[in-house]
Image 1: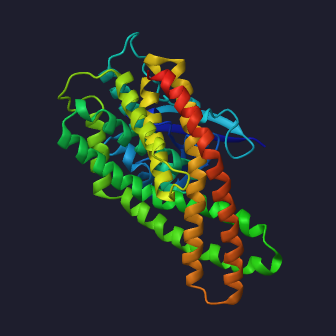
Image 2: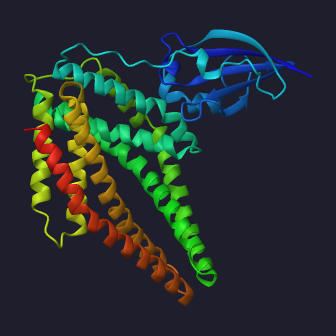
Image 3: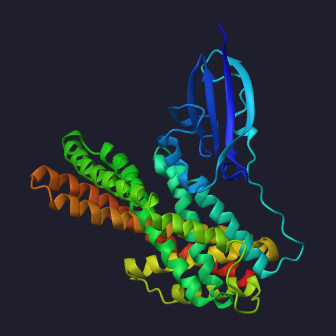
Length: 390
């Protein structure tokens, strides 16, 4: 027997939820009212549901969407009646009913300021779109994408600093840095735990138990880090940062003349090339990591220039990403070894020491393997960089 549902979709008058790719609806069946949220990370699945009446979403859902809605008033934007046997309503369009954010087309010969503002808008929208998923914690990709958007914004402001008010820029970058660290503490543990679970499963049975105890300790650390992150996302400091970003998109504090984006990208590449040239055969882990940071900045500057430079910039972005991946895996192995040793120091059993020793040796192998790939990745990046930014 088919069940009849009435769905009313809600958003602010200026469609703040829709522009972030988020759908909010109230489902009514036989007098039972439930509010549901659908997020861009999983458009076909309800991310959160809670009972509530017509006056507005219950606190659980209101809190989830607070960063996007903020002071906006929710209004009904669409009402549908659907039928279904699966509890959803077979004809309910879900996210298809909302106004998803569209990228504004750039003029034929965009100025540097136009490109920077478009990039600001794009990354600010990413932060908002993935805020609810990060709060829920069910989709690790949401946290990852929000963190990447924060990093891109910081890099953009750094590249554009000669054209912007220095105090305004540095203050905004500092606050983005605070948010990035809050996100990073959880994301780094996500990556570490995903890797170590596979490594522990590969151990001999007698070693696996001690390895699982180490993972349990890291899980507890992640739980604490996630609680800190949720507090940060619910803080006045975070909401103030979002308000500042929203003001920055249409009106960055320009003070200097336009610098062609090709020059900004070339400057970032030269810094990367200089750091890479200084690497010796026995480069320290810290020196390798510093080159990775330079490569990331150069990549983000090249992404900004793609609309003007075209394929040479696109090729550079691809090579920079590959170098980042290689050195990033090396850094992950270095961090994994450090965390394993720290966790083992809290365990005082012979078996734990044996398990950690075997896991550490695996990380040492990974470090050697990735180090061996760095020179080739650097040569290829340097080649496409010289062609793109000559």
